[in-house]
Length: 169
Image (cartoon, rainbow, N blue to C red; front, side):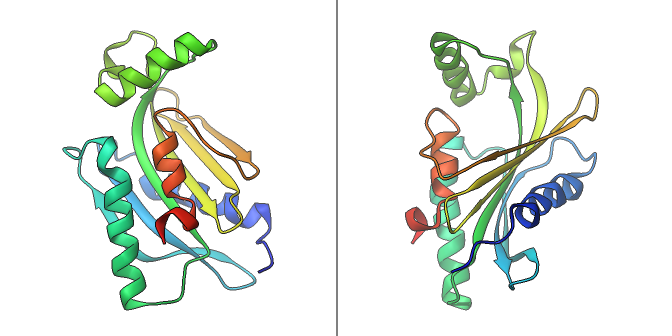
């Protein structure tokens, strides 16, 4: 399978940020990504993950949603996407990242005075590449990041690993 251009998949992450708009305090969303050889689009099932679902359960919800999609449409998607709101902090050292990860999982990050609310739109393709678009609530700024195939760790790692198609099959 030929890889989609990086710009096409980055556009999907940005489309998710646009989909979020300014509607803060919305549920997380999980969906598949289709590639037709010319354009990447969000498609298949859109699954809203309600705020009362703990992040530890996101991978199971995502697997269930993809299983339903594959039962209805057996063509495996080219990629997967996940959008969520979160609070983030700058964590430079390993110790700071460990504290931030534990606060993220405990859902206490928002209590930190240095926390910023952000909408995160993750997209991963069949080749293991990962895109992230971030939109910050306080100033509306948008940042983009890209990683070649990786093995994510930390609190966000379980969700990112779930976006890898081979883990969900």
